[in-house]
Image (cartoon, rainbow, N blue to C red):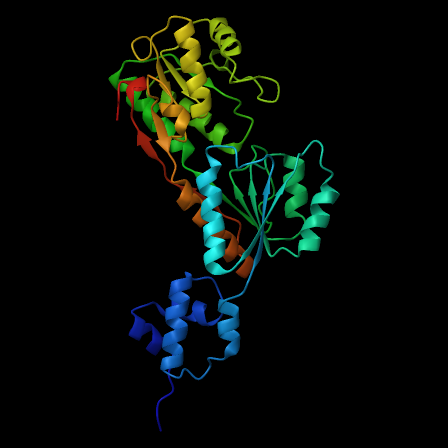
Length: 344
C-alpha cells in the first residue's frame, strides 16, 4: 500500500518548516506566494486532506477599512504608506475602503454604523490618537492594526496590534553622539509630545540620551506648545517661543521634519547660524528636510515597508483573533546632513 503523504513530506519537498506548511493548508496567514507553492505541491503529491476549502480559504477576499483622523493623501509622509497598502490589497484581491473622521465633530455612531454596514473584516487605523475614539473602536470587536498610537494607557487584552518605529532608541543614540562629539549640553525638544506615542517616545529618547551622557534637563527648556492651538509652521510663533527660552540651545530635537524646518527658518530670522551656532535634528526624512539649505539631519522611515507590515499584521490578527496584542517596532535609518555637521 502506498504511504499517505504527510505535511512533513510536503515541507521537505519545499524546504519549508512543517509549521509553515500546516498554516498554509489550514488557512492561517503565510505570504501569498508561499501559500500558492504549498497548495500546488499538495495537489501534485495528492495530499489526502486537501480539498476545495483549503484553496478558498487561501484566497479569501477580505474587506479592509482604512480609518484616519485627518485626510491623508495630502500629507507627504503618508503617500507611500497608503500606496503600499493599496497595492498589497490589489495583489491579494482584498477590498479596501477609506473613511476619514473628525474626533470632535463626527459622532462615533456614524463611524460604527459605517463599519457594520460595510461588514469590514479588519481595520487599519492611521492618525487616530483620540483616546475615547480608540476605546470605542476596539470595543467594536473588529481586528484593528494601528499605525502609531495615543499617549494614554489603553487596555491590552483587546483585538488589536500597533505598528511603530523605534523612536526612543534612535533619538537617544543621536543625542549621545552629539553630546560626546560636539560637546553639546543644552538640548531643547520642539513639538507637542502629547500628540501621539511616537512624539512622546522621541522626547523620552532625548531625555534618556542626555541622562546617559551625564547631563541634566528641565522641561522648562522645551517648546511643548499644544498643536491644537499652536502653529508650528508659523515663523513668528516659533521665533517668539525660542526667544522665551532662558538659554539658547545647542541642539533642537524636533518631533518631525516639518517642525525642524520651521525651527531652522526661525533661527535664520534670529541670525542664529545652523550648524555653526545651533544643531537641528528632525524625523521621518520627508521633503521638508531637504527643501532648503541647510539640509536637516533626519531618520528615514521605510514607509512602503510600513504599509506592507501594517496589512500583514492586520491579516494575521483577522486570522488569529485570540492572539495577544503586540507592538511591532520597525527600525529607522539615520540620514546625517549639514544641520548636525553630518555626525553619524
